[in-house]
Amino acid sequence: MTNESHYAHHRSLCADSLKEEVLLSFRGQTQYPIQGPWSTSKTSQARVDITFEDATRNILVTGATGSGKTVSVMEPALKRLIDTGCSGLVLTSKPQDLGVAIAHPEQCRVVGGSRLCTPVNLIADLPGEILVGILDRFRANTQSRDRHWGSRGLDYALFVYETYRLMGREPTLACIHNALASTREFVEEFDPWFAQRDPSELPESYRTLLTNIQNDFFNILAHGGSMHVQQAQHPRRRDEAMMQYTWHTGPILTVLRPFAMEDRLRLRLCNPQAGALDFQRLLYDEPTVVFSDIPPHEFGQNAAVVNEILRILMRNAVLRETRHQELGMGESRFTFLVADEFQSHVHLQAAGTGGGLLDDNTWFDRSREYGHINIVATQGLSSLYAQLPPETPSAAVESLFQNLGTMIAFSSHDRKTLNAAGDHLYGPDAERIRQLVASSLATGEAAVLSRSLSRHGGAVAAHVRNTPIFGAPHMTYGHSRHERKVPTDRYDAPAAARIVEPAHPKRQGQRLVEAVEAHDVAGVEAALVVGASPNTRAEDGESMLMAAVDHEIHAYYHPDEEHSHKHIMELLLAYGADPDVPAGGGWGEFSAWTPWQVAEYFDRPDLARRLRAHRRMERRHAPHR
Image (cartoon, rainbow, N blue to C red; front, side, top):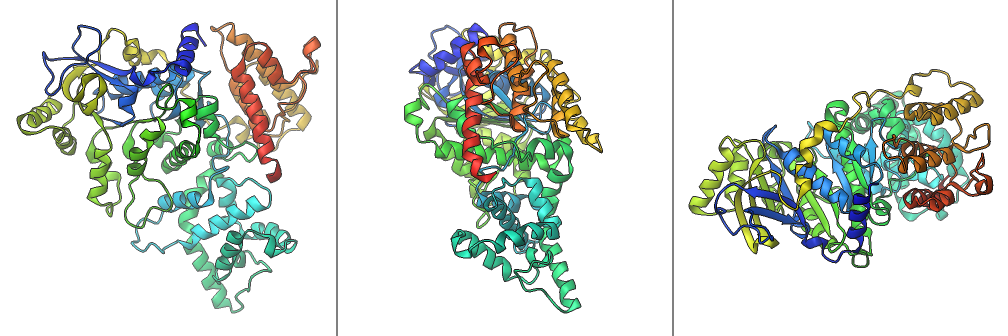
């Protein structure tokens, strides 16, 4: 981390008024705004300033492709948020945005389907009813108006999920698919386990769920031949049971199948050895920005499933946190969501379809009180409307727009966008704004419309442009996006997935050592997947975890060198490396120290915190393993 970044991070933790500082700033393009005054900033420039506190009222960015949304708003905001030590989630499909994460390796973590991603178990610690709500939303059966169509499959998925947790296993999306698809194998695990249990000692909710399952003659246990349910005797009845089971589980299996069959998703998002993606730690204890790298053009509907789970994990962490005031949230620190192509993520509840999920209306309305910022972008409001289910009430859509306090509208001919822009004003001013947005604005030019901006003393409507501006150097950060190189082959399937028979474990251990020494992230992942122990040691006795920490400490003092070993460290931890093993090797008096102790001694508290956090996570999950 550079001295400038260190200073910005320290200031964000200590300052009393980050909320009053500028997050986004734009140069005015007319002598006077259409409504309200220019900013009271201590400059003579005509400008519009949006502070951190203003942004907690939520920001909507609209504009056609190439109009400047990403370069002029999304990336400058992201740069500013990272530099001030804020933590959050970034949902994007643009590789240049991912380049921001690569340019800030100390503060950012990537999750998804590329080789830049740290393996995780995406649903570890996710409440069962929330998982069911997600599956219900994305299940493939969208042609029937009957909500019961395929609904029992949701109960079976929940049953598998809760059963595995009671068995002491952390379920994944892949293993839930496998249980539903291969019921006999699931029953071979379930029957002996259940036979050894006193039903009265099982949680009441699980007993109720089991009774509910047993009431179906076509249930998952009957389909797998379990001794704990009555089996259909007549051949015609058995055939009907199989047909009913297939009918009810088909839509769920369609959603889950890629996570079991697609190597990139299975290895990086359904890793049973990896812990949960602990957003509470990432947002509040070790301020980190999580980037999603799972674009729809590469992963289809699976991208929407993953991004929705990430959003839920982030929101749950914000809602569960009890130290907001103590940590200075909303004053000196902020959490955030930055979501491009928001039409792919929007979730508004129609009557009776919530499924336990918090919708965007509720979230945008409540998140401000927690010091949270939402910045969402879409090409046009028509594309957003098109993604909503037809039964979504118009009042829910109107309420969503009311919860978006500031609109930054780049050039667009979308009728709904123009109407929404004009709705901020009355009479001739409303028509003037519509004509401005509909005109051929230059790239980077936009209309800023807000009900209240603190540096303007109230409502603002103005024609602005993203240009270099005094006191806000981050506003030109997006102009250098072509310099941020992102590997184009990052979505290639893991090399290990193409190996039919794993080599001898000792040989894989040597392969792991060579990959760590060569800074080869893909090679490390390939060796771990086919059986190399993450606790392998080199010939001199140094653990691979210590080797990764050693290289990362060295790279910190040589910023021109590649920082790949932090990713290697995350891979080793995800596959079960023990952070409490001695460093070993040629560390002399430090040989008996653990990697986190060495990192702390050499002034790398970020690495030490990550390793200690993994120790806490291991202790928390110990009973389940």
